[in-house]
Image: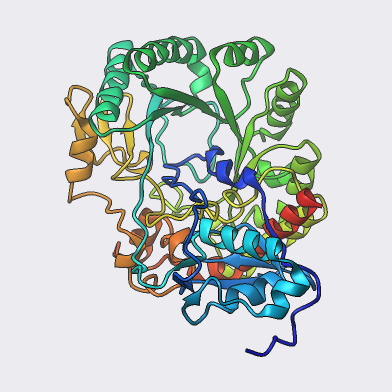
Length: 493
């Protein structure tokens, strides 16, 4: 075999930031995607075993020297031209020992073998006889949304809640936690994640603290790990609450959609006054006291133009963040300025990406850059709705998604609420991407999974079809992978 002309004399380089393996742990205001292990431990492989490059292997240029890999199993890997040539050598099945002699001589046997081991460990080189089957999900966390109160001091234009003066009772809250842990044990989950939400849950923070103490007791009794997060608008945070959150081991997610008027254009108090000043004060107060909040950004037609300035502000504070697209609902449908016009959203997002490139963070970007897509871990469903997610409303009813709390499936008294959620065929259907028209043959299938099923159904009347935001997604995904590639290069340099 002739040596490809694009191969440099530099030995193959394979870079993968181990932080990526945990990047799916960031907070979101939705049913976060299930996670699966990214890699396997390299094992000794007989040198004459035929291996082939995975069919989904593709690359995206990061700069003149490096490429970022995209496959159905892994992203966030950066390789140089020599490593790329080594990978493409296995486009046709061949034994691992079948490496050109000049490569072994020029690069060194150790460098060649280490790179091959990495390709195998990350499922980029697979045994030629092994079927390349669709990914099977293996979620280890059961998430539950507890609707602490329907009350809220804000009146955000895109909110889907009527804001009734109704609260979750202690009896229903306790029963919701018990039902969640029963389901977690029954279905073999290792971790329970509780989202204390609303409305504005900080209106009832002592109640949240009491519930979380009980959740900690249940977790200890059942031998399960516990993760808790408060989803807040950030206007009622105090030093005492921050101290209590830290003592409880809770995390905090705060919604922030822009700076000054960009935020105030869609997140206002009941009297119409903007909320940015209080939210910014709360974020800085939390940071000063050692609590790092996750920032949830809702991208709409109104806020898109201000994203770059917001990301600059966030990155200066080293805050974790997620960019989530506005989802139309019955209460917001009349506000046309919120809608996602493709050119407008793409332009705003690309400007935000440029701001990120100018100040790359240390933490992984793959789970946070493009709406519900989690580019850090492969998955067949956009989120956990209908499979690894429970929503308990303030009346003790159980539904699949917080945006459809009126479509109840069970109550807190159910012995196994998750089993009833999974069995329901009437409400929202969160189908695997492989069953969606337009997604089956897409290279982003295992990262995007077809977008939010509710948004798709509202736009098309179908669950088995790709997202109405598909063009936006496909435009932005390569840029997001490139950004992560730049970050990995910076961290590994």
